[in-house]
Amino acid sequence: MASGKRLWSISTSLVLCTTLLFACSNNSNNTNKPSNSPSTSADTGTKETNAGQTNNGGTEGNTEKKVITITYRDDGIGQDGVMYKWIQEIAANYPDKNVEIKPTPIQASEGDYFAKIALALKSKDTAPDIVTEDTFILNSDASAGYLTPLDDKVGAWEDWTNGSFIEALKKGVTASDGKVYGVPYNTDSRGLWYNKELFKKAGLPEDWAPKNWDEVLDAARTIKSKLPDVVPIWMNMGKATGEATSMQTYEMLLYGTGERLYDNDSGKWITKSQGIVDALTFIQTINKEKLGPPLSKVLNGQAGNTSTREYLPQGKLAISLDGSWITGNYLEGGAAPWPEYKDVLGFAPMPTSKGQAPGSITLAGGWALSIPANAQHKDEAWDVIKFALNKENSKKLVIASGNITVRADVGSDPEYTQMPFNEIATNYLKNAEFRPAQDKYPEVSTQIQTMVESVASGTSPQDAANKYAQDVTRTVGADKIVEK
Image 1 (spheres, one colour):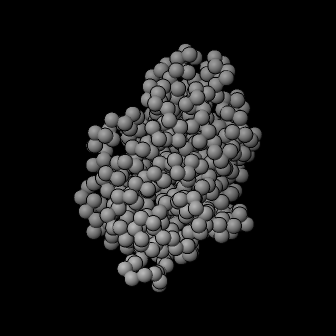
Image 2 (cartoon, helix red, strand yellow):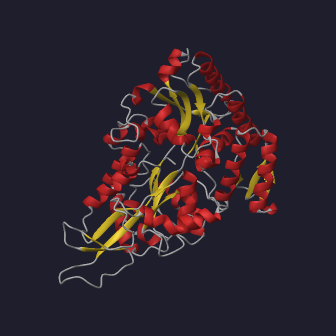
Image 3 (cartoon, rainbow, N blue to C red):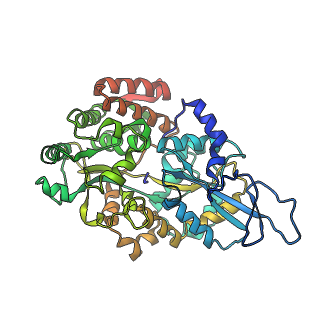
C-alpha cells in the first residue's frame, strides 16, 4: 500500500483539481451534495456541520455536530476499499456522538494523490481534518508548513510512550526538524511474489529463493520459454505509477547494488555511479527480452492494480516485484478475493545484484495519520487519531489491508501472527533500507520515474543516467551532488 510523487509541472490540471477536489470526494454517501453543505441526520435529529462551520439556526435542543474529515487515496474501488470500510467502522464505534467522522477519498493514481493533497493542504477551505501521509512525503509537507507538529500530543499519549509502538518505526514520522508530524499505522516490505503452480509447470522450484539478479532473469526466461502465454515478470516502470516506480523498482535495484541515492556522510545526492547504470540495465533487459508485460500495461497508472488484482490471481503472471500488502486484495471483502492465494503464492526475498552481503534487500515505507496545519478542529482530530490507532483498530486495519503493523502489541497478537506471509514479510525488514529523509526527495523521485520510463521505452541506460544527473543537479544544486 503499501505504499507517490508530486507532479509539479501540470499546473492547469492541478488548479482544476483544487477547485473540484472536495466537492467530488467529501460525499461518502454518493448524494452529490457539496462537502460544505450542512445536512440533517434522520436518525438523531442533530444538525450536522462540516469542520469550520457553525450552526447558527435550528430549533431548541439542537447541538452542533462537528464533522471530522479523513482524506486518503482511493485507488478506484470506492466503498469496497479497505480504508473506506475501516473509517466507516471507526465512525460507527466512536464514543463521542457529537463528532461525525467522514471518509473524504481522493480517487487518483499514486502519483497524482500527492499533488492533489499538496494543493488541498494550502487552504483552510480545502484542508481535511486528518490526512493520510506516505512517510516519504511527510518531511517535505512538514517543511512546507502543511502539517501540525504533534510532539506535545504524542508525549501525553500512553500508547506512544509505553512501548506499544515500535520505536524504530517512529523515525518515519519524524521530520528533519526533529518533530513528530504523524502517527504511523502501517509499514511494509518488498520482495518477489511468484506463482508456485506456474513455477512447477515450468520446471522451476516451488521454494524459489534466487541468490542474485541473474537467477531472477533466468527464471523469467524459463517462464517465457515454457509458458509463452504467461507474463514472466512485472515491475513498475512508468511515471504514472509514481513512487511505486521509484521505490519499488529502481531503489530496490539500486540498493541491491550496494549504492544509495543520497550520501549521508557528505550530505549530497549521488548522480553518477556504476550502481545507477546496473539498475537501469536490469530494467532494460526485462524490456529488451520481452520478459515483462506490454508497455501499454506497465506504463499505465493502474499497472499495480492490473498485476495484483488480475494477472496474479488469474495465473497470467509468474513473478511480481511488489509489496507485502498485496495479499489484502485477496481476503474476503478485498478488491480481488482469492482464497487460494496462500497456497499458490510464494514470497521470495529480492536478492542483491551479485549475491553480495547482506544477500537480500528490501525498501520499507509506510503511512501515517497527520493533522494539517489548516485543519479546522485539531483537538477533535487528535482524539479521533488516538481512537482509530489504538491496538484493536490498528489490528483490524493491518489485517484487512495485508500490511505490517507498527505496533509491538499487535505484532504479538495471535490474530495477526496467523496471517499468511506476515512472518516472512516482517523478517525481510532485517535488511530494510529507507528513502532519504530529505526535502528534495519528492522532486528527485520524479526524476527517477522519468529515467526509468525512458529506459523502458528504449533509451540506453547510460543516456538515461546522464539525463538524470543533469535533472537532479538542476533540482538540488551543483553543490549538493557527488559522483562515484
